[in-house]
Amino acid sequence: MKILVCIKQVPQKDAPLKLNEAGTWIREDVSYEVNEPDAYALEEALRQKEKHGGEVVVVTAGPARSQQVLREALAKGADRAIHLIDDSFASLDAVSTARAIAAAMEGETFDMVFTGLQSDDYGFAQTGVLLAEILGWPHATIIIGIEKTETGVRLKRELEAGHYQLMDMPLPCLLTIQSGINKLRYATLIGIKQAKNKPVKQLTLADVRSKLGANMQKIERLYVPVKQKKTEMLQGTPGEIAKKLVDKLRNEARVI
Image 1 (spheres, rainbow, N blue to C red):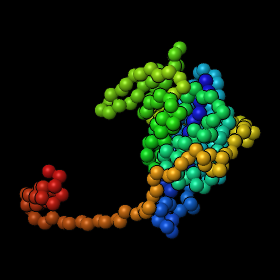
Image 2: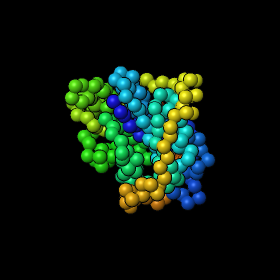
Image 3: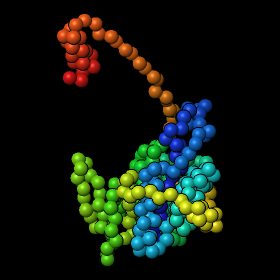
Image 4: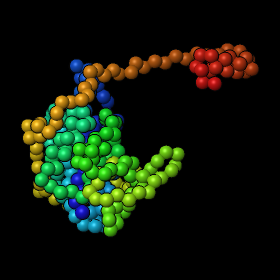
C-alpha cells in the first residue's frame, strides 16, 4: 500500500505571536512545529504500512524551514519526502495548495492520501477535500478508524453528539484524519540517523505554477484582540447582592 501524507509546519502553540509590519500575518521569528492533526495522519499511515507493507511518502508546501517537519517524519519511519519549496507557498489559499500537491503527485500512483483534519494556523479544513476533488477520488473526513478490506477500506467516522458512522470506500481514496486516532510515536536514534540518507525531492513554485491559477483568498489585515477587563463590586446584604446580580445577568449580560 502506497500512502501520501500531507503535513504542514505551523507556529508552536505556546509561541508568543506578533504581527508583521504589514499586519497581514505573524512575524517569522517564532518557533515552529508539525501541525498536530497531521502528526496523527502520519502515525496512521505508518501503522497501515506496518500491517500491510508498502511505502509512506510525506509532502509539505512552504519555505526552506518547512523541511524540518519532513525530516521528523522521515525519522519516524516515512520512506521519502516531497518538498514544494518557496516562501510563496505559505500564503496560498486552500485550493491553490491542493493544486500544488496534486501537481507534485503527477507521475506516481498512490493508494491513499492522508491529511490532518485541519491546520492549527488557518484552520480551513479544506485542503484535503479539495485535493480529493482535484484528483477525482472519493474521500471521507474525521476518520478515527481504518481497516483494510478485499475491496478497499472500512472506515469509522466521528460525527456529532457521540455518534459514529461506518462506511466502505474503494481505493484510491483520500482521508482526513482526526486527532487522537492513535498514540503518536517518538523518533528513535537510529531513525534520526537514517532520515539523513532518505531522499527529499524538491519542487519550486515555477515547477507547479501552471497548475495553480489565481489565489482565491487573501488576508488583508489581522488584528490582535484588545485586552479588556472590568470588575464591578456589588454591595449590600447577601439577598440584595443576589438580586442585583440576577438583574445584571438578565438585563446587561442577557444570559438568563
